[in-house]
Image (cartoon, rainbow, N blue to C red; front, side):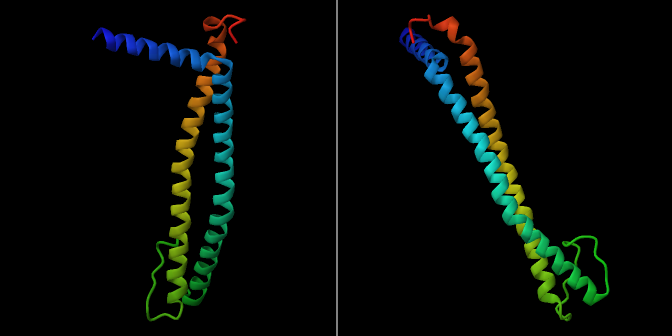
Length: 141
């Protein structure tokens, strides 16, 4: 049991020394900023792809409404009847709307993960920066 506590103590000291070193908190800060940048780029990429798809889905919805002389509240509420000549447009509009919705759900999940992880990295880097003088003397660096 004593070996376990000694090992844990050495690991804790190493972790604290690494996180409070100049190199440690600098790398954590750079990593956090990089992940925040990836978040912004992900938003841009998904938006440039998913928004035109959703726009096209609404265009198809309006074409179906015009030909069927019936107004629908939303795309999932549309009734696609095989007997109508607009059946393919109706189904295609539903498909595109579902695809864009799924893209935004996936983006949200990805962003939630990246945002939490980058926030954690930035917080630990600030703590390391503030704790640096306490754990390292000025000539240790």
